[in-house]
Image 1 (cartoon, rainbow, N blue to C red):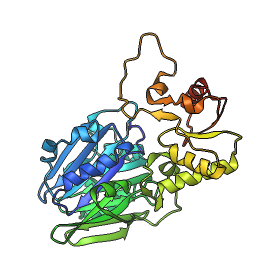
Image 2 (cartoon, rainbow, N blue to C red; image 1 turned 135 degrees about the vertical axis):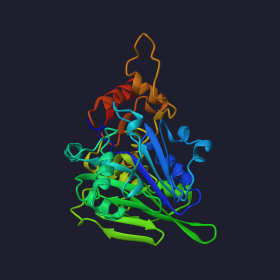
Image 3 (tube, helix red, strand yellow; image 1 turned 180 degrees about the vertical axis):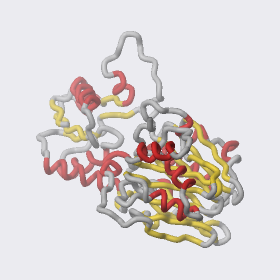
Image 4 (cartoon, helix red, strand yellow; image 1 turned 90 degrees about the horizontal axis):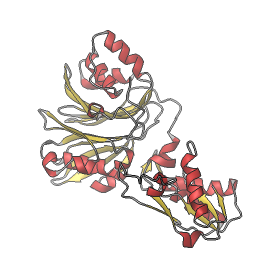
Length: 383
C-alpha cells in the first residue's frame, strides 16, 4: 500500500555553501506551510552523506545540536504534508541509500501515478522496500539502472515515471534536480554570493525560501529538465521533451505562500485577480467583503477592489492551534472551526456580508463558517 498523496510537500537543495545544513533548515522553515508531518535534511561533506529525519515541525527537529551533525557544503531537504494514516517515520524524506552509483539521497514533491506498477515489477526482480512512499521507487530505479553515472541513471529512472514530480537528489560531490515534463509542481532556481567571491546555487519549491536566506531568484527549472551542479559547474539538460503544460492550479489558489513567485508569476497577483474575476462574475448587493483567513485574504482584497465594497477582517484566525485538543464532555457545535476562527461581531452586526474563501472541497467547513457569521449578527451571507 502506498503512502497517501503528498502533493503539497516542500523541497530545497543547495550546492556550494559552507553552512548548507543551516540554509536548508531555514529554507524548510519558510516552506513549513507545505508540510507539517515530518521533515528531513541530508548533507554531503564530499566523502559521506549525513542524514536526519524526524516527525514534527522543522524548528522542533533541527536544533543547533542536530544541525551540527550535518556537515558539508551540499544539502537537500524535505518537509512532508500531513495526511491521515501512514504517519510513520519510515516515510519521512529524504531517502538515502548506498548503491553501485555511490551514496545518494532523494526527495520529491508530487505524485508518481505509476508507482504501484513500478514497485510490483521491482519487487518481482528482488527489490526490498522499507517504506510505502513512491519516492523510494525512484531510488530503486536509479540503483538498478545499467547506466554508469548517477546523472544518466537518474535520467533513465525519470523516463520511467508517470505523473507529477519536482525532485532533488544529492550525491557525494553534486546536486541534481529535475521536474516532470508537464511542469505540474513548481521548482525554482536561485543563487547567492558567499564570502570570498564564491557562488552558491539554491533550489526550492517556492521563492519565499530564497528570500529568507538572501538568495536571488533566477528562473524555474523547466518542465522535462534536469539541472546538475557539481565541481564542473552548473549544467542544464532536457531528459524528456516538454509536454503540454499542466501546472497545478491549487499552487496559486491555496498551497503556495502569497509572497512567493510560482510558475513565474506572483501568487499574490494571481489571488487578487481571481478575486476581481469573482466580483465581475458573481456581484452581490452587500455592505462588506470579509475573507476567510489566511488563504482567502488576497482574493477578498481583489473582490473588494473590483466591487467597491469595503474590505473588513471580521474573522480572526488563531495561529496557535495545536494538533490535538481536549474538548469538553458536553460537545460544542462546530468546535473545530471555532478553535481556528472567531467572528468580530462589531463588524458583522446587521451587515450583508460577502464571504470570500480560496476554495471549497466538500463544503462542510464553509457551512459551519457561514453559520458562525450568521450567529454573529450578519443579515445576509453571500459565500
